Image 1 (cartoon, rainbow, N blue to C red):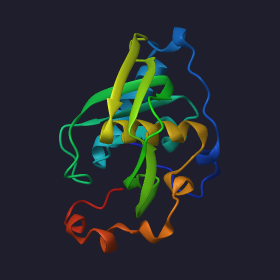
Image 2 (image 1 turned 135 degrees about the vertical axis):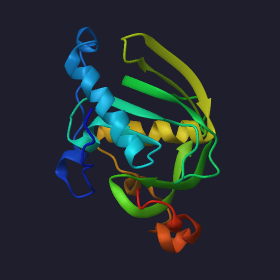
Image 3 (image 1 turned 90 degrees about the vertical axis):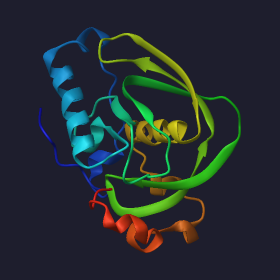
Image 4 (image 1 turned 180 degrees about the vertical axis):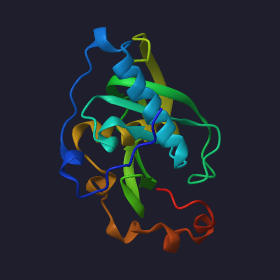
Length: 181
């Protein structure tokens, strides 16, 4: 397993749409190594999730999940999930603004509107179907990570820039944690 550097906002690769993964290739050593590297990289920086484009791999693979997260101390735990070729379906029109950060936009947080309830579907690391209905922070994390697969970063979704700024200014209590975004 390898811990990768995470691309930062401004790198044009983060603005590309990712390619679908051929389901027949999911169990190959190449795709399995990508999944392991994503998990290792995410955990090394206390991430809630990470998408393959963030490490320069233009494939529709995201990982997310944690028991406790220093960057989101009040968030409920989310089961570790590998999601390949995801499809997200909002279950209603209700959106809520809440704070987000991103490993590709270090040091910045903003309030971002997201659907509060979604269904997500895709494949796991073994090529088995995933079909889950989730809400609240879990739904937010999935939408955030899947945005990376369509070339969107969270600042592109901000509606009110009075709720946009540096994490250490907005949330000084988080500045005692490791400097990961």
